[in-house]
Length: 352
Ligand code: MRU
Image (cartoon, rainbow, N blue to C red; front, side):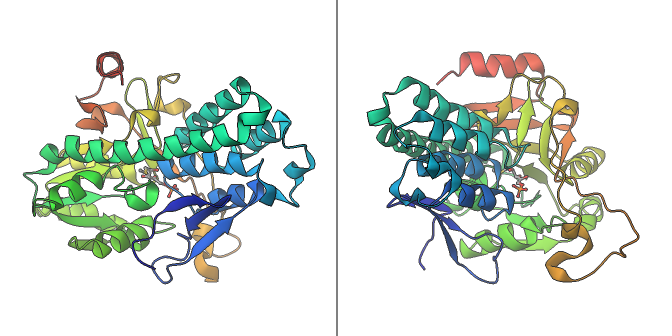
């Protein structure tokens, strides 16, 4: 398989790289029904905030496709808008934290509500493709806008995977690195392995090494001592939801990295498209944090690491307060030391 895409929609089928299998196997999962897309998002076959939104948008289209066949939603007459609305409602329950999911589903709902039923399937596919195309443009713009921030850094640290596997193309946090690579100036990348599901060790390391970028995986607990030894000049991460005041929800373990960066005087950058902002929330404490299954921590890959008698906590995300963020990079520009006012100005003055 050459240069596979994270996700594509062909012949009424959503084709996803199965990220649960990487880096061992590069395989694709084909989804032809809404429940299959729902399950793929829940299981992290497709993951990363922008990719979840794009997958869900295509998922809505499957409610009206001939292939929907034997799933529950196909019981509706597909010329009836209720099949699509039921799909939107169902997909919205797949994961709670990444606001891009709800942003994409809101766009699909607006099309359902404003389009005559006869044209609906075609218009929905066009809208999902538009969301996908816009994401490609956003990744490249974030790459351009973030490159100057990283251009003096010999080595950067990233957490989780906010690269091509989390989006349509370059990603968010990795986009400036891919951008710099085009002029032969890519920094070395340290990738936190990112317990418990190892998106850094499995996915960031896979995609950067495929692209020929120097990447070194470290355990999450190594970041502090590496900063102390001046081995890291900048941190850059993605985001699942950013509030009006600039608090950032991202993969669990991001907050301690931000605290370490502040202690060591290292800039901590967040790269995210504007559709990752949730301006209805002020404080990060209001962001719903997904709690995932005990087994992901206690028995990964079926290997028992924790006794049955012990409790386990497994929140998938944490919140980094705006005060610890040096800058947020969006497709529209850079918000230095984010505050509520600066974020409002960014949205007002850079409206697309
Ligand atoms: O649980 P995941 O793998 O979906 O978490 C992904 C992250 O936390 C990413 O950093 C975030 O979604 C940004 S992706 C551009």
